[in-house]
Image 1 (cartoon, rainbow, N blue to C red):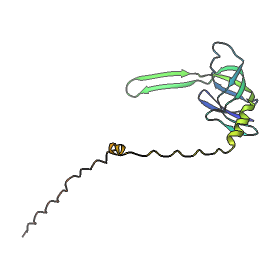
Image 2 (tube, rainbow, N blue to C red):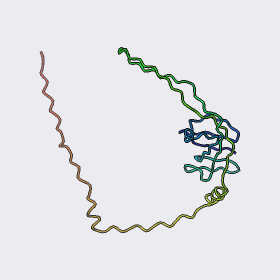
Image 3 (cartoon, rainbow, N blue to C red):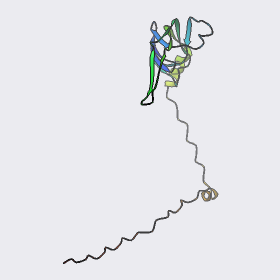
Image 4 (cartoon, rainbow, N blue to C red):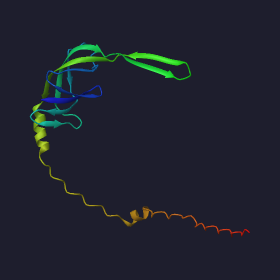
Length: 163
């Protein structure tokens, strides 16, 4: 069984036992947690495939936070030519290293998926409302286009004879 989850604006394909580096998880700064539950599951595949719109309801992925790490340094260098302007700046993104413990789905989701897969009857089309004469008058006819007057070509000047 695998799932596709969304965290930190990115999507990850995970299976039980996988170890990932994800952006710093919210809520960890106030209290040190060792477990985290992801509820933004986009796709869940096991015996059947469940595709969320946008998320699969009642699906969760439990993960254990292994450590907080920093990504390699990224150098940002700005320069403007001929102006003696140079700036160098560095940045290290903080990340969490997590291990996926369990991918779970409540039984309600499986039964709903079966119900959604069954064909649905289309409702009958509602009759169209008749337009009245007053409504037709309100809908003004298309404005007449003004055309530019036709331009007459200039007469060619008579040729002069040369001797």
